[in-house]
Amino acid sequence: MSEKKFELTCLETGKKSTAEVRSGTLGPSVLSIASLPKEHGLFAFDPGFMATASCESKITFIDGEAGVLLYRGIPIEQLAEKSSFLEVAYLLVNGELPTAEQLAEFTHAIQYHTMINESLLRFFNGFQYNAHPMAMLSGVVASLAAFYHDSMDINNPRHREIFAHRIIAKIPTIAAAAYKHALGQPFIYPRNDLDYCANLLHMFFAVPCEPYEVDPVSAQALDLLFILHADHEQNASTSTVRLAGSTGANPYAAISAGISALWGPAHGGANEAVLAMLEQIGTVENVPKFIARAKDRNDPFRLMGFGHRVYKNYDPRATIIRAMCHKVLAKLGKSDNPLFELALRLEEIALKDEYFVERRLYPNVDFYSGIIYSAIGIPQSMFTVMFAIARTVGWVAHWQEMISDPTMKIGRPRQLYTGPTQRDYVEIDKR
Ligand code: SDX
Image 1 (cartoon, protein in one colour):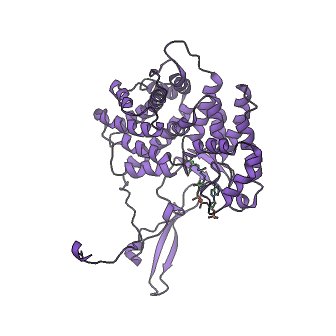
Image 2: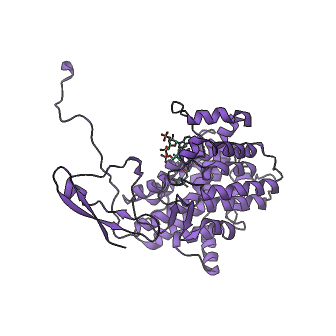
Image 3: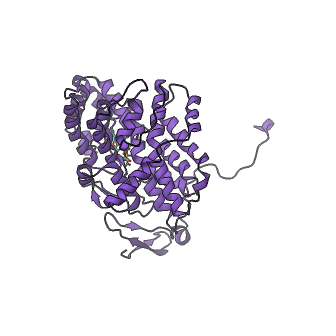
């Protein structure tokens, strides 16, 4: 859309070229720089992609200045209030909210794909009991590619749909198997009479020797957290899934790559790091000391759950989760949660501090989510796994969007080379 033009002129040689500006439906326009190498013999240089749009997408829109997040145009606040995770999954993957019939069909398809091949369960026996669940999750998800040869033609829309159903359905089962392995408890099979989040909690916490009743408050809280974590445009893990998928790799391998990227503490691993940080701070009296450390350039300590590449305002998801904390903790009879009180005071102190104000560092989605995960019984080691379960929907949506784009090309960035110029090999006795 909109063909404004930019003129690029080399000031040394006077050589000129024009570059097309493309506008989307919302947000900043983009400058197409494809002609730079040919016209000027130059690459654009943008480490960390701070100013680069890597693709065109219709899935999620973020306005970092205004703190806006839209899934297929619908504000996250409305979806959080009115929708369910599987309905949001349908919206993100298919582009529109489902009719009642479409939602029933989608829910049935997911429910009837929740079991995993029995031989996959034996994979877990190869892991130490203390293996990090994210390592088990990425390994076992990649192994799904070894099971589904019948539906691996990525150019076949029906195969892409079956992949979407399988991975969205199975990721909670695999996550629960990883958790049970870590506990040394028997694996609990999924149940088709439970909804998505209740099924997950049942697989996590049920044991064969007694009945287990899923707490509806916990299931509802998890459903809302999954809605909030489902997608976030071209974040690091989604960009990883797109890059891996752009080679034509098996989609399960692309999702596994996304899981590994999400694991980092600068990204999805932050929710686990926030709880560890709050426990390390311990009391409100220690907050100033840790704030000082977070501001000290020579100290690698950062305030986990604070700051964001895009949001230079409050992360709208953090706003919703913080409000949720009050409600969920009260409903679970845990209102006096000391870590939540500490988190609230830490936020209050940080947001009055010039360092954070100047750099526009606000709480992000990870700052409060762990408080709720803890309250519903999820252990810290599984926090990022929870993030991965929800974000699988976004990864699938972006993978589908990319693979079904006939103009898709393999992702292959270039570089600024600053290594040695050409030189000859030196025999070892002459070095
Ligand atoms: C997620 O991209 C997404 O959309 C991600 C995500 C999603 O849904 O997919 O939203 C999920 O990953 C949320 C972010 C979770 N990570 C954390 O909470 C870890 C702590 N945050 C930081 O590591 C950092 O804020 C990032 C990684 C989130 C963003 O880093 P940027 O955009 O590269 O910013 P930066 O590192 O250049 O920081 C700018 C300045 C620096 O100070 P100066 O060099 O200008 O003096 O702010 C400082 C940073 O040192 N800074 C912090 C800080 N975050 C940034 N200082 C202290 N504590 C922090 N948390």
